[in-house]
Structure formats: structure tokens, C-alpha cells
Length: 307
Ligand code: ADP
Image (cartoon, rainbow, N blue to C red; front, side):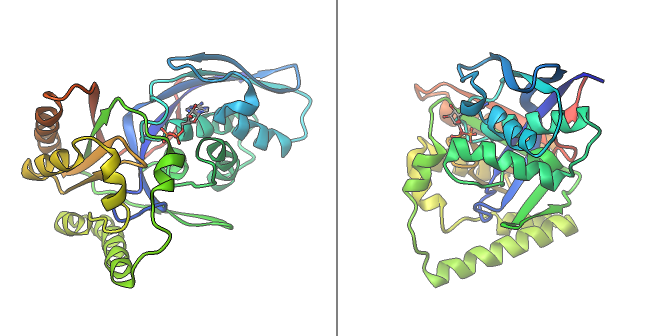
């Protein structure tokens, strides 16, 4: 096997109370990539379609993560990468993470899987750092492992896989404005009052327990973010209205996806997810901002070979 085509999924990071540690994987939104073994040594990005992104390996997250892995190999061949982007960069649903993960996953498959998924995340972290100026794995881990993940620590890298209830769906609205991860980090406070920290870690612990026990009521009461959302939501037009409309339509919770501008809502069942879609649409239809809305079951598989 000298070439594979893969689907690299979009992901939702943070998930309200899990800032920088929690994430989940979507199953019908994502990029496609082709990774190919070539005689020439090195990493080459031969094609980028969908969005205008650099082809120089050192300037593209897919290339940076591939180079990190390539440096750890001692081989007399190289790799060529084609990227077919569907996820708009800066959309808040892990555009850069999908690219960072796809290249190293593909290379690993082509050389007989010498690395495990945690090691692949280590390489992908180098790519993600190019986009967000710091190494964080909350989009990378769900893209590689699938399902819900919790990044227990980055150094050493420790990723926990959290089960997801069968009937859990996400509805995501993506307003077509760009918020850079680096910008939305800058508006966060350096200190968190102890009372808020207590609420936040009680909610995160409860969310993890709720996912393990398929307790939808507990998911609902745990999906609250008292630390980050009050600041970041100001960057997202109509955030409060979308959140309230989603909750009125039966969402278990709603919050900022990653660093925004996308907003996610979780719900029990597809029918409910569709109602939330209608509610989100009702809010944004009257604005002058373009948007799209996705409904997705939680993808428990993560990045995968499609050809
Ligand atoms: P997201 O959360 O959607 O990944 P980020 O702001 O973290 O958004 O990353 C997007 C930034 O990374 C953009 O500035 C983009 O130009 C840069 N970038 C470099 N290579 C890629 C790539 N292959 N895919 C997406 N973004 C990339």
C-alpha cells in the first residue's frame, strides 16, 4: 500500500465546562486527505483545495505535524500530502486539528502503524501549535481517538477516552466570521475566583460521570461554563439568543465550540437535534451573517481510511 485516502473529522473542543481538556468528534463534517509514499525524501504538500492555505510544509499544520513524525523516522523515502478542506479555518470546529491529525495518521498507516494514537497526538501537537501558538490537544485527541476525550495532561501526554451515550447528537451552527484561537485566548482572565473554579470542576466531573452512565439529566445540569463563556461569548454575534433558543427547543446544553465562532448544542435523539437546528436557524436567518448548520451523531471512530 503506497497511498491512502482518509476522512479527518471536525471536532468540538472545550464542551462548556471542559475548557482546554474535553472534546468530542463529529461524524459527517470533516476534511479528506490523500497521503502517499514517494521516492523523494521529505514531506511535500502537493495540493490544497477548498481554502487558501500554504503548501509549504513548514507553514501548514498538516506539514508541521508530518515533519515532526518524519524526524522520528529513519527512512529513505518521503511523503506527499493532498488536502481537501471542508472545514473553514478558524471556524472553531478543529480545522487545523483535522489537518494535523490526518497527515500523521495517514503516514502511520502506510508504514505499518509503528506509533500508537497517543504518540500520533504528540506529533500532531507540533502542527496545532503553528495555528494556535501553543500546544493543546483538545481537538486533536477526539479527531484521533473518536468519541469524547479528556486530555489529562499535555506533558506527559495522557488522553482518556470517555464513552458516549448512544442517542447523543450535536447541532452546530457556524457563523461565517473568523475568530482566531490566538485572539480568543488573549481575552481570557489570568485568574479564576475559587468559587467559580469549584463550580467548574464540579460540572466537569459530573459531565464525565454522566457520559459514563448515560445520564442525560446530569449531562444537562453539567453543561455550564462559568469561567470562559462569559468572556468569549462577547465575540460571537447572537450567542445568547442562539443558546437560549436551543435550550427552549430542548437542548441538554449549548456553548461555544472551541474558541468560536461556532456554537454547539447537545441533545438526546435526532428529532430533538432537528428542532434545535430550526431554532438556531430562526435566530440567524434575520441577521446579515452567512452561516451553516450541521447535525451529527457523536463519531466514536475518529479519523479513518476511506480508500
Ligand atoms: P480552528 O480552530 O478552526 O482550527 P485555528 O485558529 O486554531 O482554527 O487555526 C486556523 C489557523 O491555522 C489559520 O490561521 C490557518 O491559516 C492556519 N492553518 C495552517 N494550516 C492549516 C490547515 N491545514 N488547516 C487549517 N488551518 C491551517
